[in-house]
Image (cartoon, rainbow, N blue to C red; front, side, top):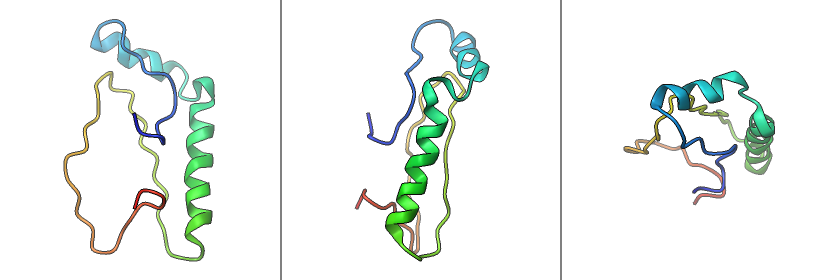
Length: 80
């Protein structure tokens, strides 16, 4: 698992049950707070460059897969 994934993985139950669990508390185990701190830290490392801070919250009960990349100039700090 990537180092910038936060929270506990929900693997038990049906897809609908797995979806319902994270919706009950999107900040369980302080995962949202940790994610926000992570992106703010990445912003601080980038200095004064223009940036967009993004957090993906997966409450689908399914695994998200990285499909493709298309960037003219973008990059993720610390992942180069």
